[in-house]
Amino acid sequence: MQQKIRREDALEYHAKGRPGKLEVIPTKDHSTQADLSLAYSPGVAEPCMAIYENREDVYKYTAKGNLVAVISNGTAVLGLGDIGPEASKPVMEGKGLLFKIYADIDVFDIELDTKNVDEFVRMVKILEPTFGGVNLEDIKAPECFEIEERLKAELNIPIMHDDQHGTAIISAAALLNALEIVSKTIQEAKILVNGAGASAISCTKLYVSLGANVDNIVMCDSKGVIRADRTDLDERKSLFATSRDLYTLEEAFVDADVFVGLSKGNTVSQDMVRSMANDPIVFAMANPTPKSVTKTLLPPALILLWQRVGRIIRIRSTTYWVSPIFFGGARRAGYGNQRSYETGGRSCAGRYG
Image (cartoon, rainbow, N blue to C red; front, top):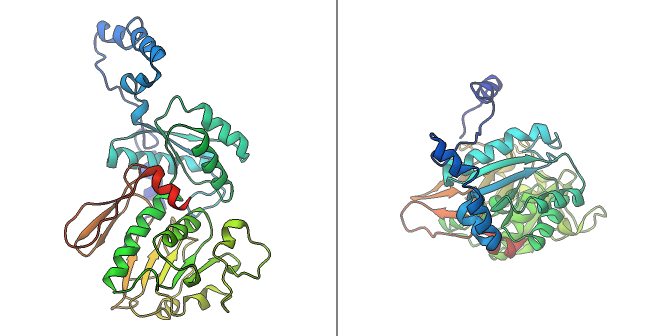
């Protein structure tokens, strides 16, 4: 379990020394006049003309290929909701830090002051020459789906929405291994998903593509169980509407094999978890505060707890690294006999997005 973070410690961490978590540093020699003449005028004209003659040479002579834009409008930040672009900046810097320490990928975080989908898409499109890839972050549903779909269709660089892709990839890898450990199949498992935003929808769609039975899935939003007789459902929620006689999260917990928590924290009681089937699997992924369940609830149960992105998940003797980049997915880093699930980038996103 993650240790409790005190407010004063978190604020001091971000404010001490140079404020924030990222900086830009040179990668070439720059101590002499000759170095500076190569870095800027007149030497810089040569790579400029080389790229003009062959646009693909931008990857050879500039940082574009190792530069990712982490972009948000602050409308769905962690579990904090619509707190605005300025308040989302610490999260975007934090994602940039993860890119750097885990994959040595550089990030410019960009916070856009717009909730208009057309404006957002237009802004990202005109930035395409700068970046080798785009990581969309903390954009509320359903706008996030349209933004991601349009950018994937209109840009020639990889587009990832981490709330969809990253969470789905790593939780699917963990789910397959967890089910194997408790001798259950994904086809027969009863899966309860709490939350109906970008992460929840995408995770559940990927589980279905891996064999989960839609009839065995119950999804809840802030109004309770997503039922087929509700009249307030959009097309994405309707995919997982159930006709079972269930109305509340508490009712949906009964006899569930898997619980996937992707809403806000502190919504789950110990009695709810105790009502699950034998050897339950609990993914407490609410952010920033996980669901209120503990490892001591059910000693024989398999309970996996982690927050989204940048975590290490250990299942028996195998370690899975939550990759923050589009080219990694869930990558086996350990040893043992457990299966490894490696998926990456746009091809994986196409399976469920």
